[in-house]
Image (cartoon, rainbow, N blue to C red; front, side, top):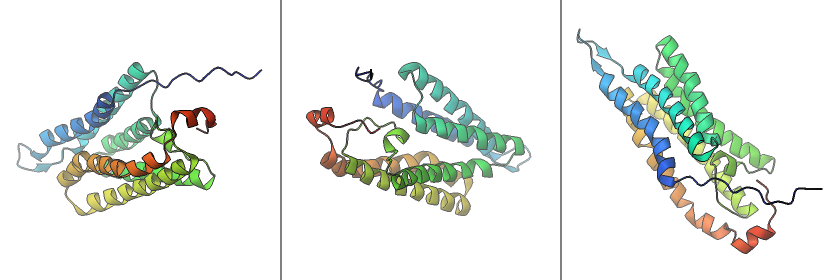
Amino acid sequence: MADLRPAPARPHVNPALKFALELGPLLLFFGVNYIFTGKDAAGVDQSGLVPATAALMAGVVVALIVSRLVTGKIPVMPLVTAVFVLIFGGLTLALNNPTFIKLKPTIVNALFGSALLGGLAFNRPLLPIVLDSVLHLTEEGWRKLTFRWGLFFFVLAALNEIVWRTQSESFWVNFKVFGVMPLTLIFALTQTPLILKHELKPEQRAAEPDHF
């Protein structure tokens, strides 16, 4: 017989903790880069991106461990991001070339955008999985929101390419730490009307099949 027991409730993550886990590794990256960027004892300019990359790699691993201990699971998006940080960070350290860590946001954002838009092509909105969402929307709402987020990830990928290829390393670091997250929060807030319009009421949730 089919198991008719209700699915276990998803563990609630304190928004402040979630924000701290996302921002913490970036602040560590920024701080180490700031400390090591400058002139060495011989007066030669030196980049802080390589040691900052090592700090970022350690930070994302710690953030995943804390997330696992607190919630009992690891969200998809931070996990994928951490894997790419470790891969491209490892290349940066091994080859002493910060270009790899600069490319990482482009590739990760393009990957998320492709996954979201590709899922739509197969009538499978993946946004609840990618963003670890606890929203309850109609199918139309999920399709529209997924399409918008897919395009937004491609915008972030393009912005990263423009910034790292045309600006200084310090500018790129500041953009990565203090630019991308505010842009993401602003974009998320602009989706509030769409979410409110397509949000399922409690009685509708009970009648709707769980597609996700």
